Image (cartoon, rainbow, N blue to C red; front, side, top):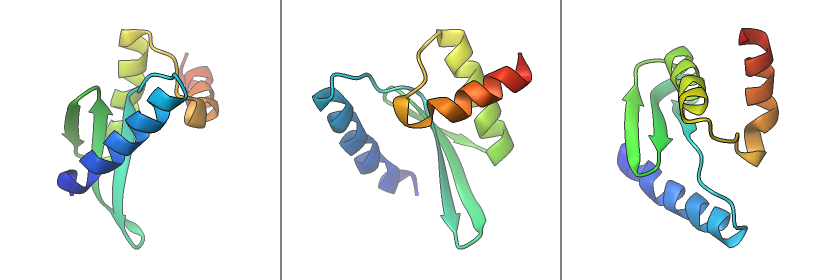
Length: 87
């Protein structure tokens, strides 16, 4: 649930602060076995509930482009691949 996500986001933010990195938009997928139960996007202190995985990826990519922010180090390869396919 969204309540379970907040502590994980705070832990990630602390880890990034320690490494002197900034928190970037992130797509979050909650799944039960093989089915995705809920999809969220976290931007700063706001958690948006998104209807589908495809919508989440699309919106997260658009947020990166609109805000002109750097991709996070952990998933930059994936976002660069998506960027190369779309642009």
